[in-house]
Amino acid sequence: MGAFWRGLHSLEEFLAKAFLILSVLTVFAGGAGRFLGHPLDWAMDWATFCFAWAVFLGADLALKEDRHVAVEILLRLLPHPVQRYLRTLLWAIIALFLVVLAIYSIQASYQTRFRSFQGIPGFSYTWLTLSVTVGSGLMLLSVLRKLRQTVRGEEP
Image (cartoon, rainbow, N blue to C red; front, side, top):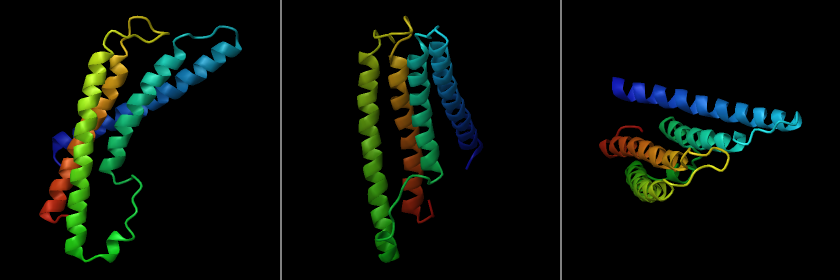
């Protein structure tokens, strides 16, 4: 893995952790404020924004580290060339799905450009929908790297 990919991985990991922590702290602050009689109108919107970014960045991290659920018991029973062919096919299908997801999320981001969060006036909902675009783009890069490794016969 080159310096660029290591740097991107470190940045993704930092941002995913930061967004998850911010989401948890925001929900806690919103609950505490409500309990004390001073609700934070923006808390749930901000927590939703942070959580969406944490989810999509975390999904790419899990993909890179092979931490997604995989049922390979049947695949391992097949001959190695067949395993390689099926892995190639599956990575290609996943890549196609991520391309479609990216296209639709770009459209959704454009359509929500004038919509703002209810509790955060002036903060465009597009920033939330961009998490899907960025996440699917990053996952597509990861899948293409794994696809290339599979085609070359390397262990992804």
